[in-house]
Length: 171
Image (cartoon, rainbow, N blue to C red; front, side, top):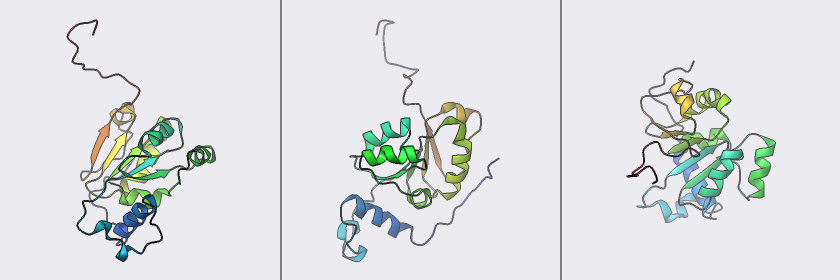
């Protein structure tokens, strides 16, 4: 099972990694951080790490979030998935670089590996961050590593809502 973790100590360079990822997204990767005034007094940008970004569901999410206002990191380990991301002109980020600075980590991975991936990702996540799961069954069956200092959001993007505002059966 997964050990219960109540606090994670992050490296001192977490903020510099976030800035570097943001500068890369904004096309200013070669600018030194001290000359980049985007962070002085600015509201922090939400950083999202998408695990399994080159998979079937991951590519759908990648396509939807690629031009979003979020600072995105796309994590993919398979050669086929990396090729799909390359076709989309999306750069791959290593999990150990993306996860510790992410405000939100989305697990778009096959159901059968959610336990292993969450056991790897959750201990690296910063306190106050959120793990988004696309498989309600994994959460229900206790396949997800949990921490008290994080939030969890479980959804399934392909299922219709259970509760609608429909007034009639025809609605």
